[in-house]
Length: 639
Ligand code: GAL
Image (cartoon, rainbow, N blue to C red; front, side):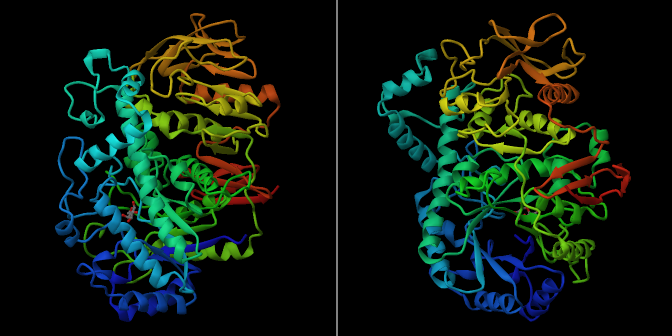
């Protein structure tokens, strides 16, 4: 498959007489896809039921005539102001009970049935008009579900929806009371209609109440998306995509992905390093113009798995894209440095090496007005080339010369589970316990060892082709996953299989995995700057557990308590710091004879079916196998 490039474009922001020139310049830059329309509702339907499609028809024709394939977005992330007159109670409500008002975007509540009907209506109208248009080659539903913390709404509509959802799930208030343990603090209910959302309580609400509300909220995102998909599918055969975000765990992406053809995500490496990732200030300064060397790869591997939820049978994962690729400084992070020259190329190649079909840069031209005027594009506001444009062209030329590199199956499987993220959010027990953070720590260690990783969903049933599997922090392992973990060498924990699905402590206490004779009898969270030393010189940070049982002990804490125990499935009783993760996984590789590497700081590898890619994230040149790779450089060699 030939990889392709795209760009995000807002014809409604620019005078019509420059559209044709823009389109020609896109094509000259090697771009073949253009995404439009996702925020254009006020121009498509300026007043309720009064439509203006002429400009959009002409925009699509102009772009299509230039040879570009159009991805048309449904505009539901930005309902126009008149929508509020029609549905005054459609706004999402924050956890403090305040409505999230008009004047930016994503001001809707997923539970509001009136807005849901509007979303279906506008999707159907667009799909009616453009479903058979030869230029429309893909659809995007909405834009970045969850962005700006919008999955969970504490509205009246959500309260009603949640009560119905609970009634369906538990059938009787008694069953719910038992499952949640509501005898504690006299929290028992007689009627589903009495159950409020778990905000505005005096002290912490009951964890299963919170967890069920998070499940419900996630289901609303999936339902909202599914409704749009149904409208489009009736009228178009073009593939349907959603653009997910980085480090966003508030809804189950595997469930949303199951209804879509292609997963995509919006990659802002420099923004994420500043805004969304842990890391000490020296590390952040070193990588401030490149982004975290592992964060993009983690999400590429995650969203490849989400793409696979859409039904692609390929063992290495499904269809996925980058829908928005950072081209220069963004506007929204605490600090917004410019990328090193070369990074707009490196990020694109890294995505291709992880299996992306298409990388679209965000955005074509920097807007001189409104919220994102300080956000770079491929063009400056005055239409001159911005630095990333030449890199885009370079990638386009390189793609021409590149054979199909394929997506290799990885040696390592890493289980990622959104429900566990919600569980630990509801019940952190230690301020640093965060599911993404834990999974990412394990992933980083694999990357520093030069290993390819496939991220797999918690309903994975076959892991036997992997050399080893990791399942950190998975609240409750399903029976099929337990079985699958037993078919390869697996390292589970900390905190894995230690809860029921209602986030209570099981009897017998976990983990309850056949062939693994350990029980977690005590847990403790560890404050920053403190740690639990291990006999191998490493340490546990954030979290440690005390194990009992007869399993073979593989590693102990310095004071002799089992830290890793088991045979085929092993339990890791703590959160290793970065170098300890690396030591543990290197020892595992050595034990099973899996090749690993010692990489200079900032160098990363990715093997495809045919090539080894080497990415230099460092701000200085580094050497790989006697080849010097410049700062922000990419090198590939045939395998
Ligand atoms: C994304 C969003 C875009 C734009 C971009 C700026 O989160 O989908 O619409 O806001 O960020 O970096």
